[in-house]
Length: 302
Image 1 (cartoon, rainbow, N blue to C red):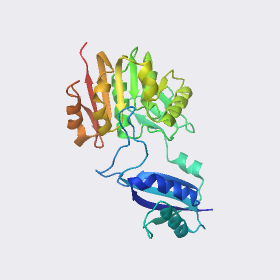
Image 2 (cartoon, rainbow, N blue to C red):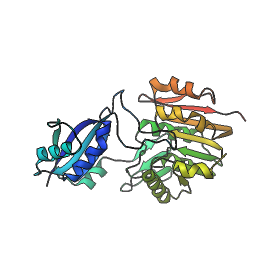
Image 3 (cartoon, rainbow, N blue to C red):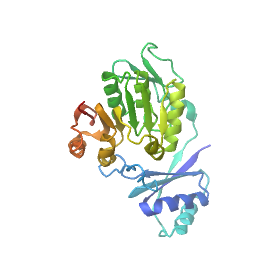
Image 4 (cartoon, helix red, strand yellow):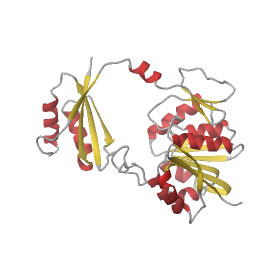
């Protein structure tokens, strides 16, 4: 059996209502992507804690609907676009999705990943190449972070070279929890992970249990009251440049005396503007660069 995907590019205001209308018209599922993904116009959907965007949509959104291959896609699109007041004849494209062994296909795309000197990220269907190394059992999932992206790799390498043994660590924007896991396995006394996405928190919690790591997880609104005034020896935030600039006073306020801040999710060309945003609070510098991405690091005096 095969399926068909309908792809429609729309402005932000139509993304959510069109998604609902496509489902009402018979789509099996609908997803929304940034139509400018991979370009300089790409927009992160992040914000200050408590100020996250209300909808998962971009200025130019790509709405993708999955339908049965024999479904009448022209009629379905016409019905959905009419329901939300979009003009008749709104352009769209279709592409075929062939039936495959999706589990085997997905697993074949993920091998163990070697990071730094002694870290291995190993999917559950593989044996660890070096059982004596720092091994993270981590399957690809919905939350960002399996170690394959340069930004995650940079933060993991920083933690390996600056082990937080006996220290407190805050992983802000934890995604899958991989940086918190590394910190825990490197001997941190306490590790807290925070993410705006409850699904990421569930993924991180599952990964911590699988790896026998004692980590506490929060969404921002839960973290703020329980951690009022808390400061940490190490703060790690692997997000994106725009939200990181907004978070400068908050993140710097979480660094204790003698503590360190590590930021990534920053393109090399964005480094100086992020450094400038943090300058009133903490001096940052480029620690390392990989594939056009950088990790920024700085320390507070004792």
